[in-house]
Length: 154
Image (cartoon, rainbow, N blue to C red; front, side):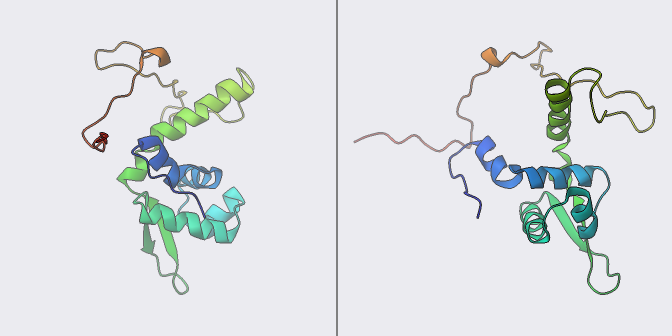
């Protein structure tokens, strides 16, 4: 059983849903057009029991929607929801980080290109609302509107 994070942290809560290798590979395949259990199994090599668990979690958490396609008995297809499709920048960032930092220029095993034009997808950049580049040392965290009230000692 996966340990559930209960702290008020969007990263911890996101990792509860998509924070393991198999889940990210399932999402990768869904972005590639895969929607059937057997195809996810073949493309990722995940054990069937783990695939069943991961797909159930992704449906439960609203990343995928499950629909009965009714071929030869009960068969399901799994499609990304809007919430699931919102993972595209995460998946592209991981892909590009891997190409740049694990393989290097000229050694990339898979390139991302636009399906229509064949042009390479450019690296992603983080920008402020005014268009300035964001550096890690210039980011700070602060409580948001959903942050729990701070406990004060008596």
